[in-house]
Length: 294
Image (cartoon, rainbow, N blue to C red; front, side, top):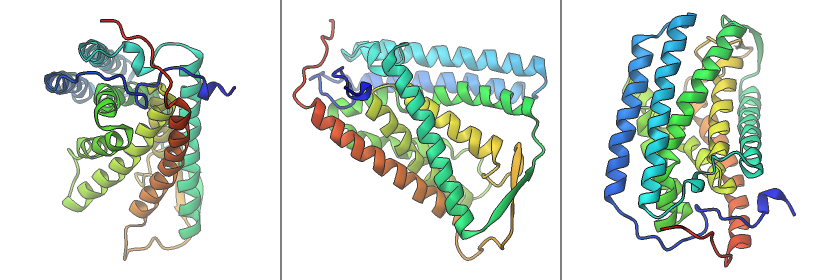
């Protein structure tokens, strides 16, 4: 039997009959905001990539990560759900989820870069970022993206999946995730672009978690997507990566090609994961969930 379809409890697909406590979401939001503020403090106070500031910033981010992880565990238990519903324990299941997430991120970036080449041919040239900077920033992505996934794909997605179903839960969490990336945008149009792209890609992260039952899948998808997009291939347009694209044709100005490509890729990958989840849900239908201790 495929390990992905092993009959273990997936708390995003299988219902437990919990009595949801609405106040826990408010408590979670407050603690998540506190943790993210700590993380931002480190980024703003120690922005340099020199060794000492980088280490201090990373330690502060790790502290924020511990806070949001602890909050997830405590409030899941308050809603009669075990910590294992996050799927973060070290196991075969979580390992498969982590590797699957990497595959999802790579495939999504291949689709996006291929579509971009079909619209506007390009080639790569050496960019300004060094290999050392790629590793440092990748580590920062790992911590920061894990915090984000615990905030948007942790307790809220699990509880919503238990109460309104995994389909609606994924859609509900997409907009908050998009709005989360709004601060710092330079204009209204740029802000709408950021909210739209991140909201659509949020569906990929959510479905990766729902399919595997392991948050490692969402984390690894999130991290590898950011690393390829921003650090390795410079497809974000910032021209600050290990390699940057040089376009051999004129970039269209009468419509937002980047937005079209990002949304198209997100929909394609999310739809494939949606189909896989639907099939998995049929396999799990009627299977009893694991005993939840009082």
